[in-house]
Amino acid sequence: MGRHTVAAPASMPRRRIVMSIIGAVAVVALVGSGVYLWVGGHLNPLLAAADGGCSEPEELVVVADPTIAPALTEIAKDFDAASDGCVATEITSQDSADTAAVFASGNAAADAWVPESSVWLDRMNATATSLGQTAPEVEVREGVASSPVVFAAAATKATELASEPVSWTRVLGGALPTILPDPEASAASLAGLYALRGHSSPDDPRQFAGAMIALGKSIPASTTAALGALNANDAPTIVITSEAQVAAYNDEEQAEPLVAAYPTDGTVALDYPFVVLPEAASSEETATAEPEAEAEGVKTRAELLDDFEAAVRDDTDVLPAAGFRAPDGSGTLDLAGIGAEAPTAEAALDGAAQLEILRAWGVLTLRSRMLAVIDVSGSMEEPAENGLRRIDIFQQAAVGAMQKFSGEVELGVWVFSTARNGELDYEDLAPIAPLADAAHTQQIAGIIQSLPQRLGGATGLYDSTLAAVKRVRESYDPEKVNSVLLITDGKNEDENGISLDALLAELKKMDDPTKPVPVIMIGFGPDTDLAAMQQIAQVTKGAAYSASKPEDLGIVLVDALSQRTCRPNCG
Image (tube, rainbow, N blue to C red; front, top):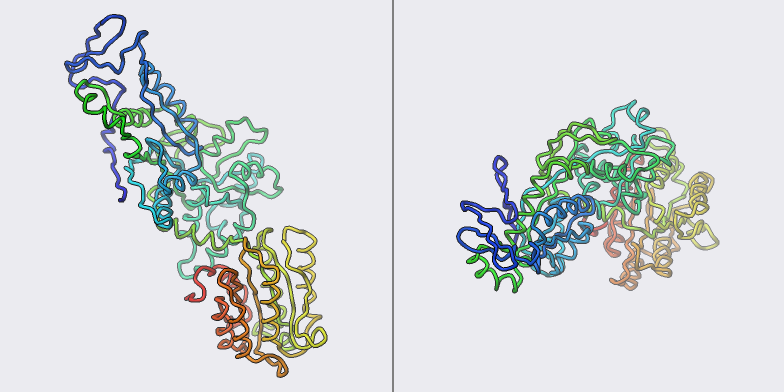
């Protein structure tokens, strides 16, 4: 079963009022102590009650994203009051990501759902497929509101921030300090990444991948936490979020309010679709009662749900006061920190493309446990084409990579050549530990700076590779991606060490599909043995990369980090 879209014409929106009378004259008749409404020739018992209300109001359950749930709750109160107590509408606030997961598992116990974005419907269907479930049958209607994606900034930093264009291009290049709430939970963040990709070079996918790695370095606990951190930063910093979330934050009477900065190179918008869940709305009890109800002029539960949707669409006060624009993106707002006029924003976002971005984000932000094994053989002192030594080029790339890593990444460092530590070709300089530990990070930075003083010897590639895989396996963490990252500029030169065939045999023997330890090999310079590296990578389900010029090492490092899910068959 799939889903389809039913959209009311823009020029003639569906407007149903609870207990409306269409083509009939209403006559109120006093019968006993109850009040009845005469509709189309029938007494309507839905409004019958001793005191003008209903003894058993019809209950409607609407699950809504927390960003819009408070506004819908306020609208629902007026809607229920207008029914004289004959309808009880419950608005359940739940993160759209959580709702998508719940509905995908087959537990759609609600009448309707208002997610933050249509992308969560695509996520729901994809999740259902992955669970072996049939995607829930839902009716997707047009959005009841919209909210453009903006850059939230501290009001005190607004003038300084505006001294340069505030744009996606600057975010992409790392020139504008940016905080991104987790797109796994925030449609605004995911839509922001979609916009960011649209401004990246189509000829260089590494540009967008590198930007995501940088944005994923520190993921705040929530959007609220991200917004709250803005005033603590010395440099002007932005949070990718929505207008409505900026309005909600400021509505809490924060000591330091925020402003919405609008990207100069355009933006996108969240659409808040109204999703009807037919199976949940048509319970057995309702289905049994509907024929009799139809005969007596009583509205069905589905019709009452239509009426609530119409009430939301007709609202011109509550939603704008909460920072929402009209479904088509229009509307004027009068809220502190928010622009009065709506920005031009793309609303019809490609759901499949957003899910692709989300999968890439999941790969790039996987918390790694990595042992970096660095070649410090004498050839690393040879000059590259730009005049710098190969080791100098590696230092620059390593510093750049370190800046992109999250504090949750665990990293250890070995160096290798030949006979570095007695008969061993490798030397353990730093244990595998979290980069969140400032002392550990400082230790690794010191090691990188000291590499030129450690050069010497030949390339003991095979023994070092085998020992590194064994070390990572000794303290394997099933909650992380455990891997070996080996960087070399040459080929194995240890005549007394293990052969390539023996190495491959040992790696095959050690292989455990439940505890994979891929070896990611990066060779740079003209002397690398790419064929041997590829065989090692294939056996461990890792990957082998070649930087034809040492200057390309930084680009290749991004590739190595961004292609985890395609190994060992990365293109």
